Length: 342
Ligand code: FAD
Ligand code: EPU
Image (cartoon, rainbow, N blue to C red; front, side, top):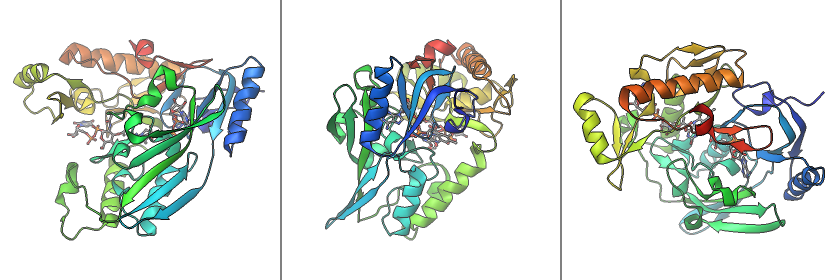
């Protein structure tokens, strides 16, 4: 019997792999990768499986990154953290706060590993990892060489980085360098964080507010499987935005530095009255329409069918075509999520 991947993906999809290799060092990771290659089998690397959808059984090795270790170097104006890729992100946020190192509080409760955080440049409540990340250490799996990419080389964008490009998919992230400035400045720009007093607020209070907001609308994967926002917030041109606002003046939107406009995909889905809409065991979350949930025994087909339906409804109503944020894994490798649901 092939091992189950159910506890290795937060959607809770029942799929199997030929082998699951939990690795605790760069050497173990490389060995697992090479073993699969020598057996003519595919391999993929995962962290905590909180941004993936297994479409099928995986015909090879799923390598689970559990490279641990947190090293802190104190400098005059900052703390430099060198963090193993398999550390849990939220635990890192908690530990740094407890030790008086503020700066990660807006990113509290984001599931997943530290090593996955640069891949889609995780972001929430006005902060993205690109503002804190100094470097990303990788192994080039084609030759076993270690490579360090400095912040500017990572090409961070909204839910994007160089690690999503085809040429970098054979890079395994093994550690991330973060810089936390000692002179802490609260970032209170997003949502109801602006009700906090910037003069007196503490990092712990920001952390608590973020945790409260998140738990009130995002489903707990332990209760209902999910992978967070299923789609990215669409970014449209200023002209397209102007046309849309004629009909929908209340549409939430965020002007971008390049003149484009980001829309709230959750609002667009909500306007199509899709909250609670079900296909098989998959449903649109009632508290946050951008999240698709596994209500019980959803298959990946149920989730794909629901994502297709949601995209069509939003596209037909607004002429805005949503793109998945979640990464889709086929039987041998990652496949195009957009083509799968189109
Ligand atoms: P996985 O899902 O395991 O992997 C993601 C991708 O990275 C896969 O393609 C995998 O092959 C690749 N990968 C994994 N590890 C490595 C490695 N070491 N080297 C190279 N490639 C690797 N995201 C946000 O940005 N903001 C949020 O607010 C947010 N909220 C969420 C809330 C919930 C309830 C959930 C379930 C998810 C949320 N997410 C959010 C998405 C998710 O938490 C992030 O994308 C996270 O960084 C994924 O980490 P992971 O370890 O689970 O990655
Ligand atoms: N909205 C609705 N109905 C809904 C959902 C949202 O009207 O069902 C409206 C809200 O009222 C608000 C706007 O849409 O005016 C934005 O909603 P929210 O603040 O909940 O954030 P989001 O844009 O839906 C993004 C990220 C989240 C991140 C939050 C907070 C993306 C794809 N998602 O969600 O990240 O936590 O902002 O910063 O950018 C993730 O990536 O998995 C994720 C959860």
